Image (cartoon, rainbow, N blue to C red; front, side, top):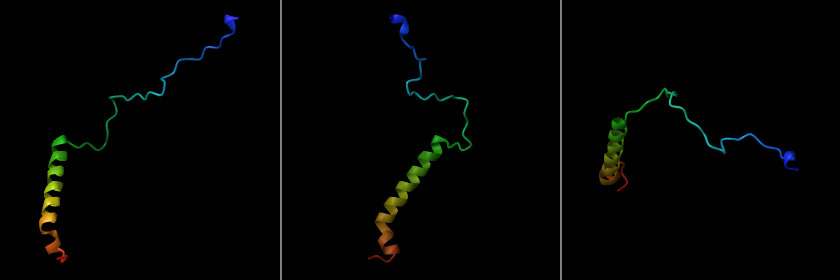
Length: 58
């Protein structure tokens, strides 16, 4: 009876494999991301401080 078993091939169990040989066409250096974040924070602070007066909302 044990010979009637059907064995299925092993699978990746839903795991996705990523390969290191893929190169994106768009590459951003970490330093550029940090500078961009600092600029956005500065702009946010500046707009909270003077934005209402500049856009006539006061």
